[in-house]
Amino acid sequence: MAKTYTVAANSTFQPGGMSGHRAAWLIDAVPNPLAQTGPKLTLNTQPPNGAVVVGAGNGAAVNFANNPHIHTHGLLQCFAICAAWNKVGDTFTNGYLAHVSAPQHPFCNAAVGQIPAHAFVVVGIGQGAWGGVMANRLANVVPANNIWIYTRAQNGHVGFGIDRYGRFGET
Image 1: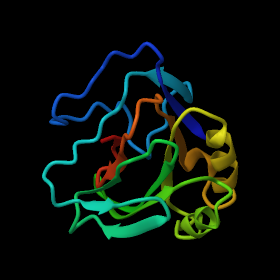
Image 2: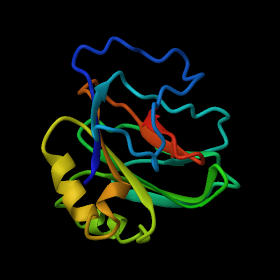
Image 3: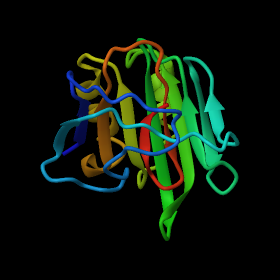
């Protein structure tokens, strides 16, 4: 069963300079219960030598040895698909991020096709039903327990990403 994290409607947390990481779980952690609600999770994108995916219809694979994180920005109506795989010790070797405009767009299928069967995946979405759609689509590629659906508040042009440790969140 896919894991869910929903930013609480009354969350007042605002990141201060993105100097820390607020995620309670890693991409490969399974909380109990699986449905969670809470404050916005933020990803520290400092130092600035991580990879950036710019704009809808774009995706990139990374070697986490060379890039400590990968993220995108400008997710007003779009969503981000992040994946990490090949964990050695406490870090993942490989990652991928796609900036997708809609589940119906052909790029969404291409993006999902870049994810290996043993990956862990998190989808950062805005409000709406796309979380369930994406969880079902991804369950055809990776085990359902390897999937997180992160539903963010509708608060403008946010970003989303993942780092080499499997921490995920807004940027």
